[in-house]
Image (cartoon, rainbow, N blue to C red; front, side, top):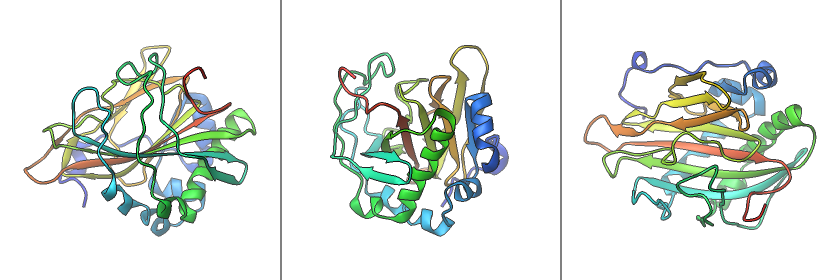
Amino acid sequence: MMSTMTATTLLAPPVTPAARLVLVLRDQGHAALSAAGLNELIDVTPAALDALRPSWNDLPPDSHLKDGGRYRRRRHSCFIVEGDAVTQVAHRAHWQPIEYNALHGGLERWFEPMASSVVAQPAWTQLLRGLAAICTALRGAQPWYVEAHQFRIDTTDGIGRPTPEGAHRDGVDFVAVILIDRHGIKGGETRVFDAAGPTGLRFTMSEPWTTLLLDDARVIHESTPIQPVDDGEAHRDTLVLTFRSGGFQGPGV
């Protein structure tokens, strides 16, 4: 069930056709796909992708929030994509340098891995393979080191913060932010800024599987806090995939 907010209150993302995705990413450093565009890009049916969505109901709490919040649940797993081959690697900590994450940088954060029943689905492999192919089209053929983060931001604390670290880069080559669901919330606006200038844009992803792709060296991004629209349960679910050349981030890397 989607948010009770009407569509007229939400500024829709500027959608790029799948066939022009590489051109727009190269030109602007960011591009958004509709759900239909993502289906076309990765050659997966909507039903196959939707089969992944129930796993967001089984995310453990994030115990590493330094602001003391209880509003975030997540799972995290890592993969290497090289051509058509998608390989899950041994479970590892998520690590970012302080210059990219002032709130949680410099910490080895261990999260529960993604469920094997999710990773085993062909739609999951197709998703990683299809997005990695876009990275390859822009930067050349190479192994892509992918970190996958399943997030649920809720309003347990009255307010939920999708990006508690604020506007940021991730220290990778490319980032994909994919909306899975928004239920009973207001807020959660996506903002993308030019890393080297004053230009930017804002919009709200409301359709499940809307996908924002970012060239991490060129843009800074954030999502605004969420609040409930009534007294019921409220949350925003996303999948964040980061693609990095040369290896995973880690201390000394």
